[in-house]
Image 1 (tube, each protein chain N blue to C red):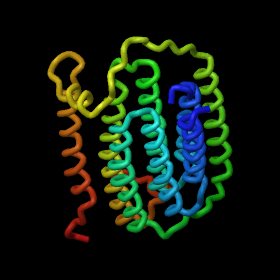
Image 2 (image 1 turned 180 degrees about the vertical axis):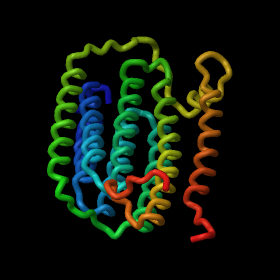
Image 3 (image 1 turned 90 degrees about the horizontal axis):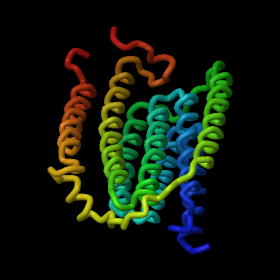
Length: 104
Length: 170
């Protein structure tokens, strides 16, 4: 793995991040927006692990940040899916343009 | 090129391809499956970086938990495909310009920065070292974030049950 330059890993994570950004702005289904957020979080995790591995191998901070990001992503997805199911029950749609009421 | 380098580039190509398919495909169920493959590819990259614990966590939490949850919610909510909106073209154009410009800018920043490795003797990212530091009360220990995140998980558990619960009146 040492032969792979750090910059290639960073370029990979940048591509993944902006694919997620693109999906976040273009998708109209709430669940696919959630998938784009997962892509963004994964690219951030790759960055943390790569910096930990290449630049600061004497400490484990990148590993811990990745660990907590994964945990918080799990919590976030479960809450978001609960909200989406509740929205579908009330409005019968999960389109991003139709679900513009917060409380009624 | 050593075999691990070749495997890295193959995995990177797979991650980018499946990530793009996740974003661009029109069938929502296929998007979920492509997301699954992307996450497995990212786990492979972690294994190549010798972060086996993070790779295992990625497989368990993302592939085993989050994607399964997303697929269940697709079955519960969706009819299988997305509708097309007249406003979509403008939105796709602006999002493509925004993300393309952002990608070029961040690659420019990343390639112009000079990275200086710390050059101190590395410690092994084994489960033993991670666990000892995670539950350490001393300096640079992570026991307080660990407890906070456990409260957060409990709150998310209860909150999602309360939000998704069917009310009796309906």
